[in-house]
Image (tube, rainbow, N blue to C red):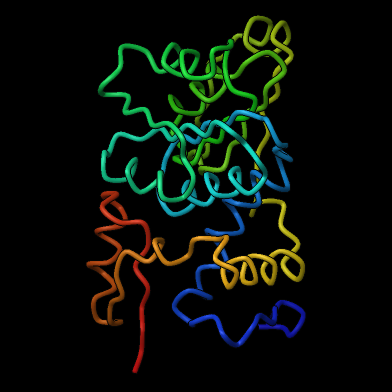
Length: 225
């Protein structure tokens, strides 16, 4: 690794927490803070509450969003999202229509910002549908190459004055943002502890990947003696 890619953080932060800052944290939190520039009073929805989505939730909380809607199929993840700042949750299996459910929560035509953190065509399209007038949908999840979204540019984008934007690594400036999140963690204002679902040994890495793939955990951290 070249020295210009190394970022120094406070020595007080445990390694198993500091390691989270390099990818999922900056991508999720950065999407809300840097890319979308969520402001005080904005409403937010996050589709997919894994490790990256949880950080999008707490990034929106830090930015001052009063209503943050976590959307996921797994009840356990929705409960976890509340600890990161979600004020409302929606399980698509428990509502007739996600768009209507979002509108009922916001009491408007939709949210100001929607973050898709799964990487699926249906949820990417849904992120646009749940926007209010002038809202922005942000694609964080990696949709497979070749997949095409089916939207009506006139109805879904132009007339509603919406935008759809890709997010890469949360538009992060590593030397600025990583020390900032580390300091916020030390101040008790940024949640890293609940991101670590479990610590595992290197020999357990395949089981860790399996648990991550089926959505059972937020993050496993490999530790060495």
